[in-house]
Image (cartoon, rainbow, N blue to C red; front, side, top):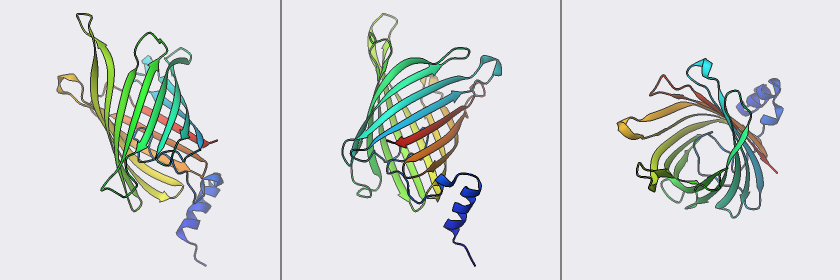
Length: 249
């Protein structure tokens, strides 16, 4: 007797000891990527917890790996609007994790899904360092995404604004433009494969870009994403590896 393709995937996942991944239900705000944002917000009235862990591997092993950890609580305000608060920790080689900043974030869908040629979302973030005497950083993203059958494509137009002190001691805001792009494919409702690229446009006319694969698995209340990114413009910079875990509370 023949077995449907979807059932084959379920049996394979169960054979690997991951039966909780074999589900046809996925979170409404499930992330497909680890760096790129897509067109998604939390469900209204739903509280979720997300944990980000990033490892920055140096090009030379003697320098040691540094880590960044973020803990987020996210709440859906309306059908198209949510807000979140983060705590940010950093661990330098040979040291322990230290609280370095907190972040406030909000996302808003600018139109209903499918109403425009692309699905637009606005992302705003304020990051305040642990030294409250210094003004924090602002970041804005315009997310332009679209689903095509089992494919998702998402472009992030990013602007980071922070206070810079000039040689004369005067302080002014400096805006740094960046781009991020992701392409993801759904193998099953619970399992997706993708690729991400992100980069900035620093001074002296040289771009810095990272690219790498991403894996995403999810159930109706839980998801895990793992991705890596390699700097394709400089052999002196090591790769970054990031994992995200999200749980509905």
